[in-house]
Image 1 (cartoon, helix red, strand yellow):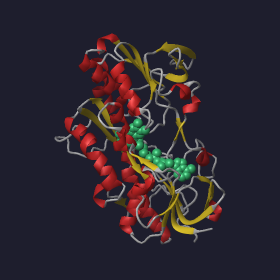
Image 2: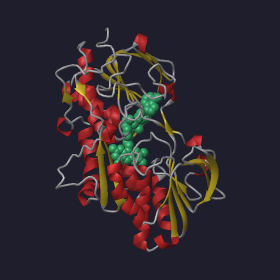
Image 3: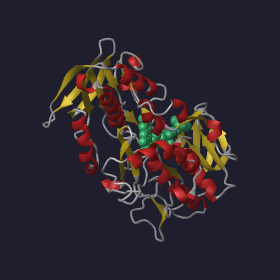
Image 4: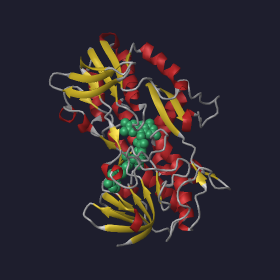
Length: 423
Ligand code: FAD
């Protein structure tokens, strides 16, 4: 089989950003990307599509426009890993060899885990900002729903952009408030979790909006079935003692955030941890058992917020450590778990959650410019006007000014994987 110095699985946010970071460091590096899709999506824009701010076309580019020159693109899906032979098997059985492998296929949205859901998506008032083709329907529904009940659901963690389910709700409520429909609407946030947001520092600001919009918070409500024709959503509701019962709620509008899991070809592979995600060292992003394999993005098991913002910081760390591995050296760059979730609490204002491992706040701006735990106009401008540009022109290109990795002079203490690979 053909063999590449660096083989990358996935050409999404993570695969492209790490490619950019590698090429910035070594422009002549032999890199190949396995990526089946002809389109590349800027998914963080879908919240603003659903909120009537962006046109969905702004979130899409042809994959060939995003693929850097000089990189070999295999337009195919990876199906299996043969780490002992340093090979990846494609869907058609073809094998590709590597000296180092970077695994970044994102996660799987499990629409079929909820009976009745797939058939009714895009009609009967059922929508989701988690799909390019459905986000415009969210905005359509926000405009056409003037009374009744609107449900917004959130599945069990982990999910990508954990704030996205409530972002959709706040933007809807803001529109209904401005257009005078809010008093005739009963809005409910049905979350499988027991808290509004995972990092407590951001909850007070969000609660002010929950009160302003008179949102009913339904904790430990997991969506388990949808009957679109009769506009009924079924939830499993668990109480503090762990007892659960099933409850049906009628709706006029239902925004669903689907359950999410690792792709099957990852969870069925020797690369997976017990929960199915790629088993990575949280600091070096090197695989815990295979020293020549690295991973980043949504498919990894590192306990950061699954966001493009996290990818921005992970990509240069992986690039550094892959170049080290190619030289037979141990990893030297570390990732602090940074992730960010710009919570669109109203049109024109954002609560900019930025935090690392353990919920440690990691603000990018001085507090006099942006107070992350408070709603901010500047953060909205960042999200609407600047972040898309930064994504396409700096993050995917691996620009060094955007995220400088922390380089260690000694080896990370909890380093478990093999030092270098045997080439
Ligand atoms: P993706 O970008 O999903 O890319 C995965 C790629 O792998 C795809 O191109 C896919 O085709 C490819 N692939 C899949 N299977 C295979 C295979 N078998 N072989 C080869 N390739 C494969 N992040 C933020 O930072 N801020 C936000 O405000 C934000 N909001 C969001 C709102 C919504 C509604 C959604 C859905 C996401 C949001 N995100 C946000 C999250 C962000 O989009 C993801 O965290 C980010 O895209 C992760 O990058 P990734 O490369 O791991 O996955």
